[in-house]
Image 1: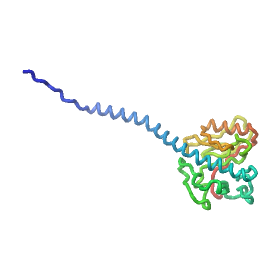
Image 2: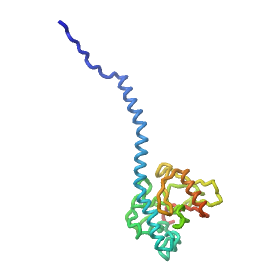
Image 3: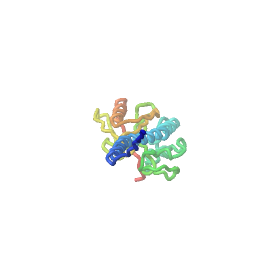
Image 4: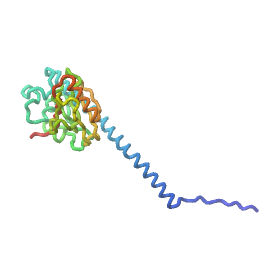
Length: 223
């Protein structure tokens, strides 16, 4: 009589189990940064429309009604923000064009919160967008607005560059919002995602196309 023998399935040994755990941990370590970057990119994409509205279309609509002048180029007595001690008036002057100030805070900016009241809006707390003081509607390559996490140009709250710097533009993004990248809005209201190297190229292009100065006025509260 033939007796059939069945081998019982062998379980993992401790060594094999540790190897499997090590492999899974290694794969997870490879995937987590990619997932984190994908999440960051999705937030950046979600920011494009509010930035275009708050930093591009809104200012353009204001300029259309005010002799091609953006709010920060029009005297406060005429409805602009030039001469105001409150930086936030740069956007408050556009309240009719923008409807809600909530769009001025980037979802990736952990230092800013959305705010729905124009009267108590504070650039230091609720605005993620710088304004380009020398932007002109007639010059589409001039920089109208962008993410506040820019630095260089002598530092301070109004970094600037002149034609005298030539190819030595030091504009760059820090890592507080989009991981050393950022978005800018040109005077034609188009939004562009840029690295620090690309930001330098845009500043250089603005200077090469007739701007004697390029100044980014960063958000702040009342001094």
